[in-house]
Length: 351
Length: 283
Image 1 (cartoon, rainbow over the protein chains, first blue to last red):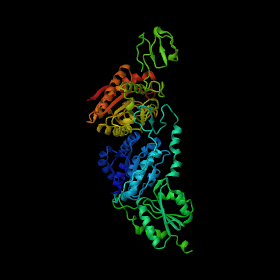
Image 2: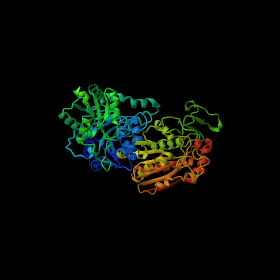
Image 3: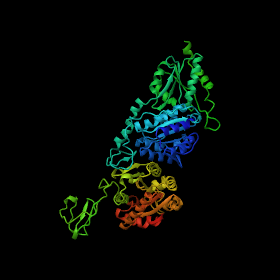
Image 4: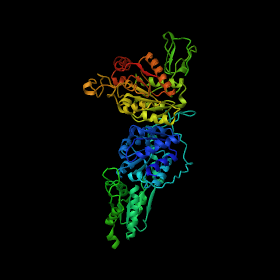
């Protein structure tokens, strides 16, 4: 299956029963898949009239306790930012897919353009299998923390066909959805709001908002996900995420064959960022390189983690094909290997 | 709601606040429990779905009257247990916390999309939106048009006072020609600000729309008539006929810059001239 289809099917198997989306390359295939697949399981797929309306519909459905998802691409995600901030404040567990062009939407995904103190948990798969696994985790994490979760993919992930196995999670530990608006039959009525508490007649707005951000440290403690290797003796550590992270892993192996002591770190959770793992590796390495297909975004998180323990060098850059959507010339193992050799701390090696 | 007829027909007791006794006697000023004349009976009370006896809006505001009318109907039609209100952003955003109904608080202009998501996953629920003119007709025009065109089985309630009340008196899309606001000082002019939008007439022709009416909250007769419009709109949703809209003209004396008691007259003379009260579509 293509990564997009794997992701969509995983969502359905994780219990997603509502999807609303607006077509935009390279996320459109998820909408196409859902429009056929969701009605087969009694779900609803809405071909929304704009991204703003798509996220609004997902908001309403998720607020009723139904698992709901939307997907778009950087530009469309920009239009949804107002709702993202308030979905986090209302603690509504939506899942959002940001199928980027290149990797220029790292800031958008991990910081967002919305207002206030909100955070999204951001997961970044590098294969169709991982897209399926992380999608199932996304729904689980969204409900576990009552916080939106974003999956950040890219053109190659969306359009590469690979074998996929679907492995639903054991979700017995999830709490009941007492926050869902379902009509107040047999219970007290509630308000599901980004502006304040759910209890009627309560005016404790500050406590409600404190509750929203109070879980951030716990998420940072518990939900870091990372793929790392060859770090024990590494002189140079290369950090890369998403599908390009897979290319980097391969290039690092080739560098090892040439005798260079290089290791890799592939953050899977972009927020929370695997800062401790990066910091630990930087303690021993002579340098840290960052490969990302943008002007330098994740490198700031790497620098914050390294905290001056080693020089941090960008070996990526903006790279697009002629369409602006697809794979650019830098996403090439030979190119990445060359860049690794260029920045490898040779003086240290010969010393 | 208690609705018994008093032995003395002139006795009207409003909520828990004041009592007008027969023959102009000085009434007790504070509380129902102080009344010792047991020939008096309670004939009028707040709807049970209203959790307080007060609101935070201005004296003379029409929005609490509209809320009360809606709550009365939900109670009379026994819809509480399956009702989900989707509330927009305006002065009426003070309401979700004081009503005994499940509410989703939406962002400014976005209530129709949120309501769509709610109704699509809970098709047996009763869903209505509460939006002001700034929310629905200015910020959220696209949302309400698409929701109406799709024929979503929800009821949109528009509280139209022709002004941004919550921000303190600024021009909205529905401010009438000549209306003085803080952003149309000297009066809204066609030259400078363009024409107001009559959203009810705009939406009614769409095939997905089952019911559209415009009422008002400025006289007892108008309230009674508007309540019937709301009932018909709610019923059309329950019958699965499609999208329904009830536009309710409400007083905003504070941001019309008139005294509270002058609000109903201003509505009658100025707002109603642009927005006539009528059933625009019923099917």
